Length: 106
Image 1 (tube, rainbow, N blue to C red):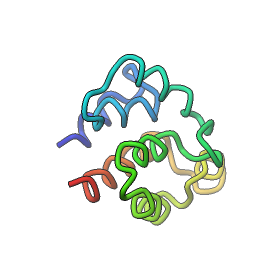
Image 2: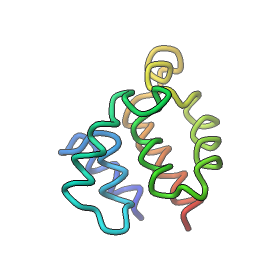
Image 3: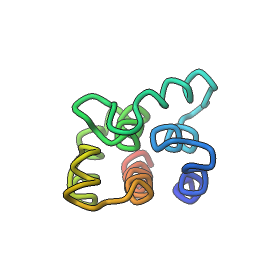
Image 4: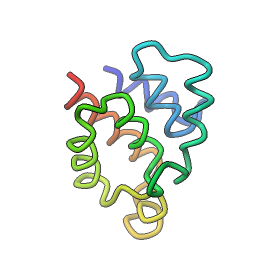
């Protein structure tokens, strides 16, 4: 399952967004990995979690469902809120984004 691959790659060597991209993109490239790094750490639009952002980019047809699943399971979609108020770890965010992709990306 790709979820385990994503979890293993998190911070070894990838950021949250890179991890999801590397595990789930159809044909991941170095350029794609470099681009995804720019969306980690709350730098995605609306301060979204980088793992969540990557998941919605990989499966845009199910972005709303992925976001809803993520919010229900992580507590929010915004990186800073996840860390400070929800106390959801980055590791858990990667896992939840991976679960959402497994669920909605078939």
